[in-house]
Length: 232
Image (tube, rainbow, N blue to C red):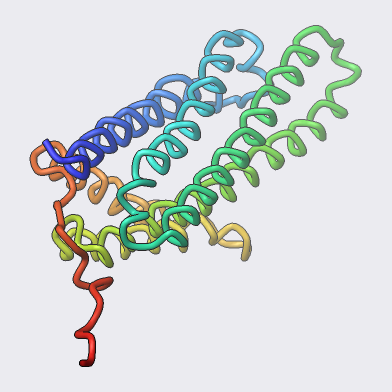
């Protein structure tokens, strides 16, 4: 098996693991915490879930770095700037994810303080609830914008270097842009348009299936990078 094909299949496994971890973190562990009446009342009784969710959040960020590291030698055949730029963006994404998990654990600490406080401090805790939720949510939205940017750069590289069918790569770029726009809406006072997030999940699944079956295309020499004829 060629190095490019092997790298593609490793990335497929990492991407699938990341998607599974993200689903468990949000839909299994955090959904009950954020359900009515809210995290202030719920989180203290679910401290283990919160801790696991924070760890899984860090794992999702580290997997992005792992994908970039695995892609590095393949992308460097075509463009050092793209290869190292993709890695730098993945590291930035992990950094924002780490900030989000810190804010998540701060919400747990606030809930635990609320559980041990008397009713006289209820108004103060309600104020702190809004501040704690806002800190986590803004880190979450910014993290999704950066993660969408990571996905866009990935699909852009796959398109430019023809490492997968360009139709699939082009759909991935459009899906990544759709997510970026959707999760950027709160920055302008609008609600997240969740239906615009779904195409990226479908694109990732299609990419995973393709890479599992085929890996990255093996090129003897990139047509984009091939030198022209030498005058004599």
